[in-house]
Image 1: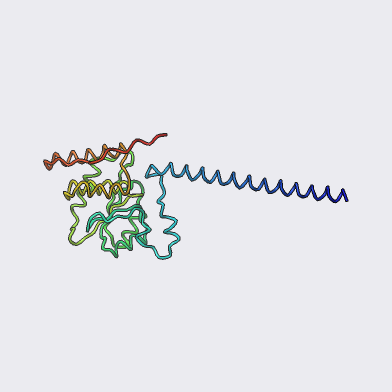
Image 2: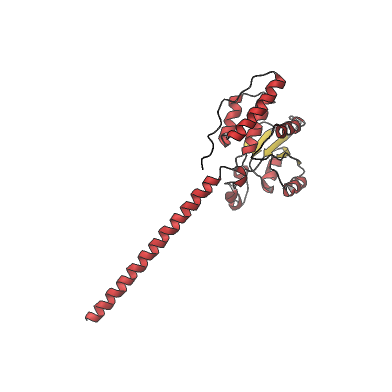
Length: 229
């Protein structure tokens, strides 16, 4: 009888030990998963190193909509902006009346050039370095925008997450279209708060147009605090 009891106790101890080990492994896995999630979030500050958050939803959606297009905005009747669109988004935008696409992403853009060509959309690339946007970049963008017939055509300005795009459309609205800075700022801040590099660039653009137009347009916000490491 004692032998049977000893055996039963040994089995019970072994079972409890196994269950405890399983719980420890589960807790460790959860901690690792949480750590990876926090690390991914920290990297999202840099647009070029970020992945659009809606990409998984877009893949899961059997019927793509503009709601799955990252940070999509209608900034004016003829003027839209967004993160990186795929072919289905571009097709939907064409149905919305978009005729021109301005791509602010540098590098090899062959895939998008082909897609827009197949859809019959006019494509224009202004390669903007995330770490060093320039006045020349914006003047190039503005020159193309001003060539568009705003009564007949619509333009999509896009980058990867619409951080570049939001800054460019904000600047175009207040400097070229003469819109209220407060109204344009509302759309900008809904996407992101420009960091010191981009704030300085935006200030340079505004100073240029103030000198040309004899105006005193100014940003009603300060730069975001630099990212701490």
